[in-house]
Amino acid sequence: MKLSWVKTHWLIKKLFSNYIWDIPNNENKVYLTFDDGPTPEITNWTLELLKSYNAKATFFCIGDNIKKYPEIFQKVIYDGHSIGNHTFNHLNGWKTKKQIYIENTNLFEIERCKTFANFETENPKLFRPPYGKIKPSQSKILRKSGYKIVMWDVLSEDFDNKISPEQGLENVLKNVRSGSIIVFHDSKKAFSNLEYILPRTLAFLKEIGFVCEKIT
Image 1: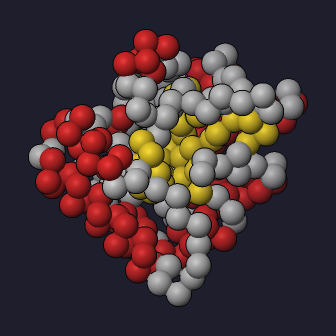
Image 2 (image 1 turned 90 degrees about the vertical axis):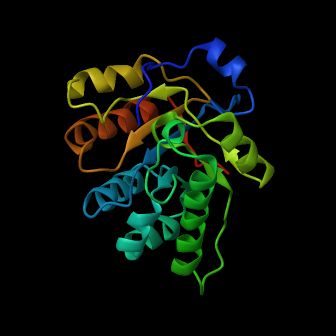
């Protein structure tokens, strides 16, 4: 994913107010999110680190990765985190026809249901467009079918190999507020930055009394 801002501008939030950019609250709750998994080793590493801080998060998964790694996907659920739809093949909505985009989103749900055919699980209808790029026509259909379009308030940029881990951490610590939705990636591309940023972010949030919750 990539859009160019680290802290989402208030004007963007106002213009696209039918998307969720943050979740304001008076309880010092913040919302960690992870895109592009599940990924062998990296998602498990992320889950263990979250558990050590008693932190909950939301994982916006790619359907094809669920198909490849169902056991890791199941572990995300069993550990008490929320799952969101990130399309089946990580499609760029701006470059994809409406029908194909919606079909790809539906493929994700089919794969999720197959993986959990014998289990009762919470199933919040959360959707994050890959790259943050989605056409109004695509968004309208998804919202009509019950999806919440979840964007972000703070972007760590862990996926960007041109920034240092220290810069990625600064992106988060300087901009996080109560209610922030923060984006990380449990992917191979992001791991060299994530490995540095995430533990320090969790330690910082704990120190200042913030609670990490999942989106429902």
